[in-house]
Length: 201
Ligand code: ZN
Image (cartoon, rainbow, N blue to C red; front, side, top):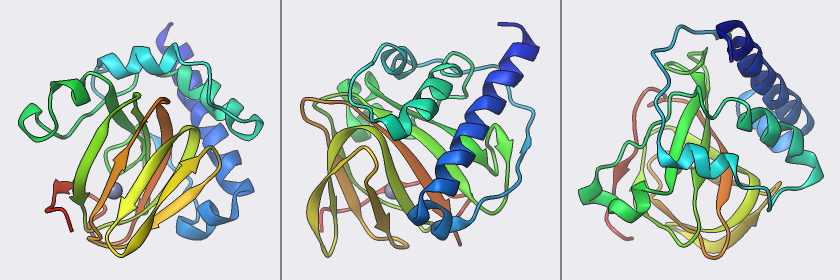
C-alpha cells in the first residue's frame, strides 16, 4: 500500500466507526463523537494479533461487517500495543492479544475528549483483573467473551452487546472457543492513563 492508500484505509475505518457509533445509542450516548483529525504516527508496530485478526472470518454479524472489513484494511499499518508485560499476563496471552488506539490523545486520529481502541483477544485467554480511572464502554464487534466486574454478575457478550465499567471498577475477561474483537471507548478523568492490574475482588 502506498502512503496515500494507507491514509485512505484509515479514513475508511474512522468513517465506519463513525457510522456504527451514530447508529448505536449506547455508543453515541457514552461519549458523543469528536471530529478527530488524522495524527502523525510512528512506523506501524506489528504483533502476532494483527495477523490473527486479519485471518479470522467468523463471529461477525451484518451490523459490524463493514467495520470489521475496514479494520482488517489497517491491521498491517496500525500502531499495535500490548501494555502488559509477560510477567503480568504470560507469553501465551501476549501471543494472541493486542489493541490499537484508532481515536484518542495518542491515536491514529487525534482527540482529547474520547479514546476509541480496537482490541483483539484470541481464543482461550484469561485477561486478569485490572482497572483504570477512565470510564469505559465495551462494544463487541465480533466473537464473544465472558465479562466479569466487581459488583456485577458475570455476562457473556456477543457481537452488538455493550458493557459499562465505572471509574476504577476492577474487571476481567475470559475467552473460550472464539476470539473476540471489541471497540473500547474511554471518557472522563484518566483519559490519557493506562490500565493496571488489580487484586481479584
Ligand atoms: Zn477496562
